[in-house]
Length: 193
Image 1 (cartoon, rainbow, N blue to C red):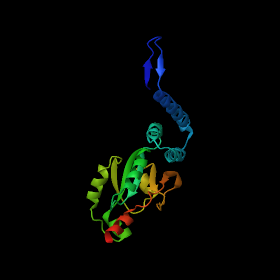
Image 2 (cartoon, one colour):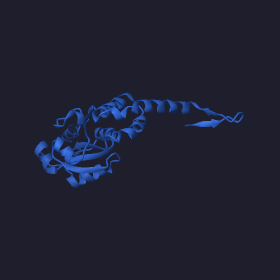
Image 3 (spheres, rainbow, N blue to C red):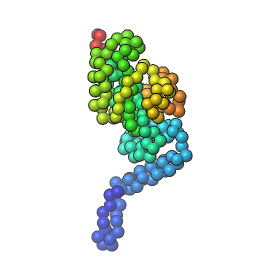
Image 4 (cartoon, rainbow, N blue to C red):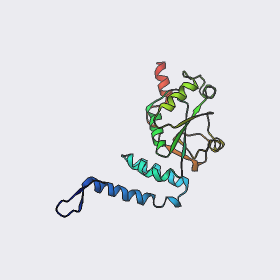
């Protein structure tokens, strides 16, 4: 909080920026005061709603301090046959929920699902994923993630684009809209022309 002393009577004077901080603190306290009564799915839904309505992500990080006691391990599954800004944006959103674990498809799974071997090996794609500041951990996965996989790796939530086909219960799933106009398929088709 920014305050300046009033030299004539020794009282503190709150500046406009400190009033904004007080307002933010009140909103934070109000939005988190009932977290103890919320279920995991309710908290994740509230965070998604906050994300959808906020331009400033700092308030979400502020909110996240309370929410992480509910959701520590957040899974984002990907193949990373190419890396684009849609991936980064999804990982950034996931990082607002807690510790981001990337489930990275094996080379064989990509061959089975997409019909080609990735240009970069699993080890190289893992190295790239770990270099992204939002990613804490990378684990190998099959093409589809199920609840048994989440349980085995102690994952609280799967974060995915709204094109999700993973058979995961809705209470353990947070969906975000895909970034428009970009996908790994679009990028690979650009290279063919």
